[in-house]
Image (cartoon, rainbow, N blue to C red; front, side, top):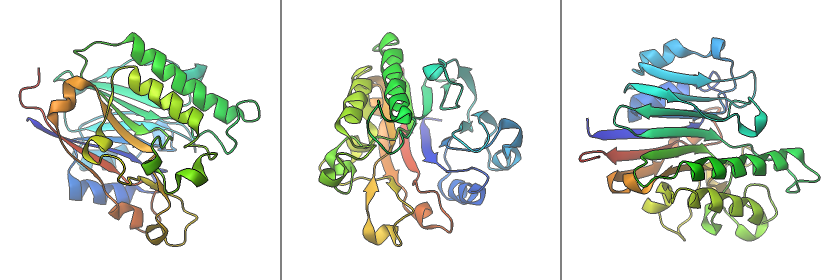
Length: 270
C-alpha cells in the first residue's frame, strides 16, 4: 500500500468526543490517527471502539483528566522509546516505527499558562524547557536518511498568518517571540519541513484552533495554528495533500481543535 493518510487531532477528551472520532474516521478513513489531550487513564480508554473502527494496532499513554496521547494504526508498528521529558511522566509523547521505516512522533507540548514569563509562571518555564529538550533530542538523532514525522498540538502558532491578529497576540502565550524562537530551534534541529505551510504558503491565513469563548467561532474566525505536521527531507517528495477539516469543529460539543489530515504517496520510498 503506497498511499497513507495520517491525521493529528487534539480531541480534548477522547471519551467526551468518541462519537465525533467515530464519525470522522467513517468519513475520512485515516491509516494513522494521532490523538492528543485524551484525558483518560489507560485502563479506561475506550479501546474496543477503536478496534471497531478498523485500528488493529495502538499505543496509548494517558492519565486522569489531563494530557494524554495515543496513536492508532491500520498498519503494524513497533513502539519507540522516548525520553522522560523534563523529568515528568505527564504523558505528552509517543513514537512508533512503521514497517516501512517511517517513525511517527506524536506530541502534546505544554500549553504554558497565561503569563509569558518564566519567573512568574512555572507552566511557561515548563513549556520552554520541554521545547528545548525536543531540540536537543532531535539534534542528537540527525541523519539525512531519517524518515521522521512529527505531529501534534505544539501549542505555538509561529507565523504572523498563523494567528488572527499578530499585533494583538504578540504578548499572548502561543505567539510570543520567545516561543517562536524555541520552535525555530526545533525546526532547525532536523531540517524539518512544515507540511501545512508546504501546501498553504504564507501569508495565507491558516488556523487549527478556535476558542470556545467566541459565540460564533466561524464568523469571528479568531483562530490560531497550534497543531502541526512536520516531516524530515527524505519524506518531502512523498507529500501529496493536506487539509484542516473544519466540519468537526462545528459539531455539537466539539473539541476546540480541528483535525489535520495529510496524505502521502510512499511509492519508491527508500
